[in-house]
Length: 310
Image (tube, rainbow, N blue to C red; front, side, top):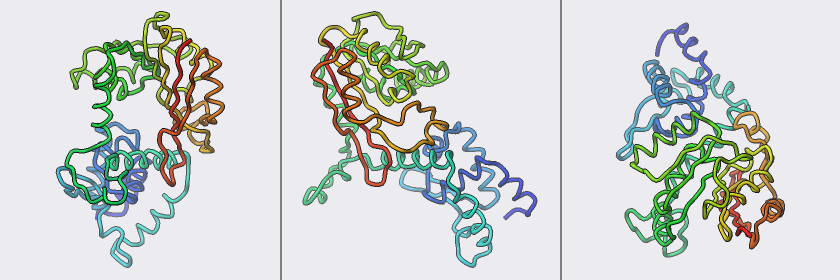
């Protein structure tokens, strides 16, 4: 343990305090910490190095991965650092918009860890061991059954869904309003050697895609960021060919108001009937809205909606 003045300087950084708080909840690897904290990987690694040098954090092997956790001595009741941990728990226990955001992203990391058939089997199926079986692989297999169509991913963000769509689409047009986000998405696609994506800078209300030029329009976790959801859906209808399909993944209405300041959400999700009305009003028929994902204790429920362009 370093001396008191150095320790106080170390703990005077908000990001390091957030990192300690999260590791107190769950051992995580660097990539997971990057996702939870929203801090660049280089920054996370630097903060971890300082905390390890101070004896507050240690590395631990978990299979083929290296995870980071709080040093066991820190949390031992009556141990040499028990007083420090008691103080940290009190300080970090205050719920703020930022800690709520960290907790929401941590829940998503936990969900991704468990995103396998093992979490969805029941009864005798739980005793089956099938190495490599997973929901992501199954979804990609279903993509092989889809025709090679033109797709627009509106509000593509970091490009994860864009890249998955590009595996089965003829081409994908990915649109986002952030230059930085588009740059990261393009870099990810380049690393994965995906070449059938066209990246465009644009807003959901004014999509830089020609009228009636695509077969599928995707809006994944984008509609609640739109200033005018009706306008965004109308733009999706405009760029679709007759009979083209709209697919929306978004949040059901919730009460987590912290997402406005922390994540930039304009809308706290949508009621099921509200989303159905919005889609129908934009010129779609055969509209379906259903639950796409829901977990016990998670404040966010994902709605899955689709419609056909008239």
